[in-house]
Length: 163
Image 1: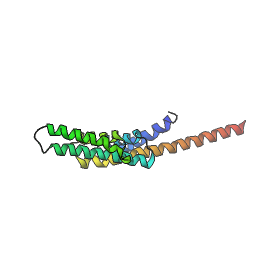
Image 2: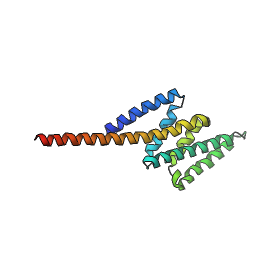
Image 3: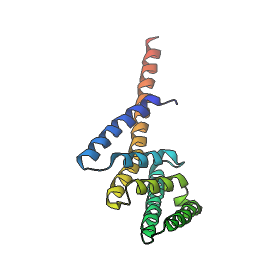
Image 4: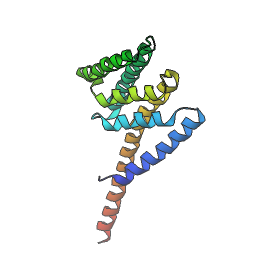
């Protein structure tokens, strides 16, 4: 990884900021980090990557909510298994739609929903902020790379002038 230091600085700085913001506003920190990870795991960058992370994670939240809600109407756990099978298939099939093409993002959103017992109000804000966090880390890393390149260019230029 050529730009390890720039990545480390931007990720560390913004992760610390996110942890503080999440604490101050009583948001679930780890949800934001999973959404941020979704941004970096899928193949798109920039705004398109951020929107892909958001849409796939949110679709998974929907499927998780559907499994939990649908299962709650029945006494037998068999219905939960059936809802899980249907939703899992749907999360894979929805990848035919380009904006939902990152299947792991849907599974991450679904798992978050299970872990949070379908508390949608606690899930959505850090999930969306986490995708913005990933995008912000990417932007800051790019700026640090540009600054490093300018600095290295100036040093090289000055060394050439001194010889």
